[in-house]
Image (tube, rainbow, N blue to C red; front, side, top):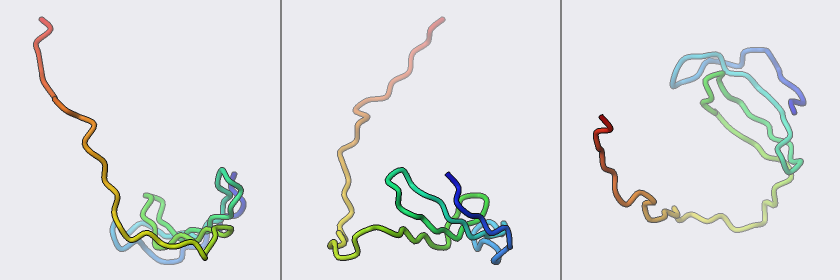
Length: 77
């Protein structure tokens, strides 16, 4: 659900040079999400209102074991 989109160009993307727009939407949990991003999906910043700021920030990167154990090819003809 899109709450508000400011169609004014706020600059150009550093990655792809597309126009950058300010938008405000609600996520699936009801939080207001304000973003400054280009139309190709590159974000300058994201601000999510309603998230607890007192929660500790986890600085570790969590990785899981690869789900792909084996890749093989065969001929069907």
